[in-house]
Image (spheres, rainbow, N blue to C red):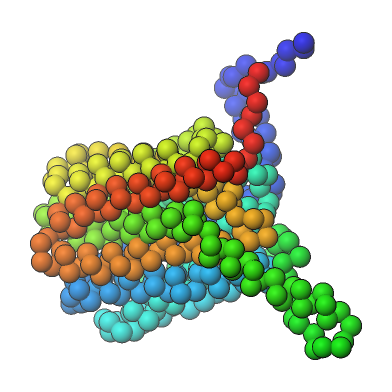
Length: 434
């Protein structure tokens, strides 16, 4: 039996290996990653400091939580619609619509002042438009990537988001200190540039069979075919509604996302009130970004065909440990260590969580499933307002102790749903043993 020759690793061969790895993915994957990198940079320039901005303007903690909860409410309300449009219109139009409307909301933030109702409306609009861009982008990645490499493709996408999470706030705080409005304007411009880039550089990937024509009137040619396409969506939605494994997974992700969002919204307030310098918060975000950027791809390659349930569930124990550290520790070094632990749990869980919906959904329903995945953000809609009132009554430590409990509960549901998915035999084929 011939033995495959492998080039020994060396510094000279490293560039060739890197080029070969990059070339192993379809070009549109890298274009989508680049688009998300720019879009996320703009978003993270303003989102983590929106709570500080509002508090500085005199907005109460309770009202602040309600404003922050507006975006996930919009994500839930419009997520399924955005995914449905991505299946029927195609990926590109929905992506372009999303970033264009998001730019409008960001420009609005620049001139909204401290009016709570206007801020809530703009945050609602911003959350709504993300449900157009994100499901369509995730569906496009699923279209372009070979099934056995989707985990890696989604890892590259997450690396782009986390890289933006690392430098976006640093850019944003610099602009914020000079002129708070500037960050919103720059972010809006970046979103518009992403829309132009998608229109000119990224091909459409949606299966055309899902773009059904409008129903014809009775008696006209083509009526049967068109009626079939129009009626197809009803069984599709009934199929999804009866998918208990997906809804169990969704419930777990709601709890986890609700807890995780507290890092952006209430952690800076908690640390500031505890007397911890704000640079510690910025450094914690950088630690999180660095871990996710450098560890996400190796973790995703390692777990690309591994069972989903065990990793999705056990990784949330690291979340809980990190949140407990944030709740009760005050030393900058220990707080950064708590973020490190949480970040390890994040890359561990994300390596399998990103595979669940694309593997679980039927090919023609991926857009709808990914759109409905925005229901995960419903957890934020409940947790953010509750955290505001909890912090007002009992302080920030209670908020992050509660986040630890939510992480454990959510991880338990993810374990159950993921294990049922694993037991169904759905997913990429595992490589055969020699």
